Length: 269
Figure 1: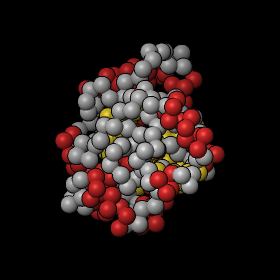
Figure 2: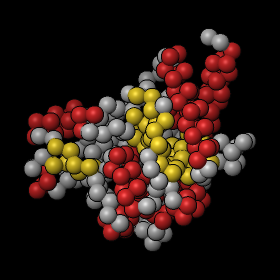
Figure 3: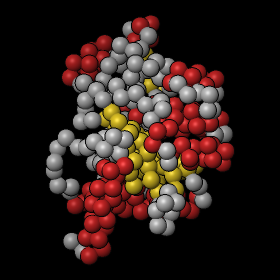
């Protein structure tokens, strides 16, 4: 292992410790398995983090929507699986970037909020080492930045009960992309200070979730084998027609660009 990689690993370990202290609460995002990281994965993750940092710096933005490809969703025509809200942190030397996002606990039915650096965000055994970035419109950045730095406001619309395929217009559960989207709505429209109001604003602004076509056997198998997948919050007329609507990264990116709330998608690898 060369000296540069050793320094990067040391920096990653220090950053991980800091992110644990900044988590909301501190246990959020902790891995269920204690296993040494694969050297090649660490190298790829750090490289992607560095390329992403360079792209974010070059954009001149203060706040962006940042996505990773944690799972292979190509069968559904989707590229990215998980998004966070990334901001330039003026409290860090050199104005480093931080990512706020929601993480599911070990496949269980609960999740919490997490604040990480770019390296930690990408060192999570992704399916593909590729990032998706949408720079938000200036007014949206101005509204979001103070919220992202405020732990209490970040948690305003957070629901701990987690469902990977949560229905976008219900409040029983909340998945990771859904929290980020609703929080963005709350920042732009301060009166949207409940999940119901945030969802109403999103509907008014024309957000359209992704529809997945999942048959009854697929739904039954997922419900039985996965604690973090439920379908009971979906309307019966859609569920029994095999139409499962949920918030995906691709649908959020499409909506941001369609409404002018964000710029064109930038891919980084």
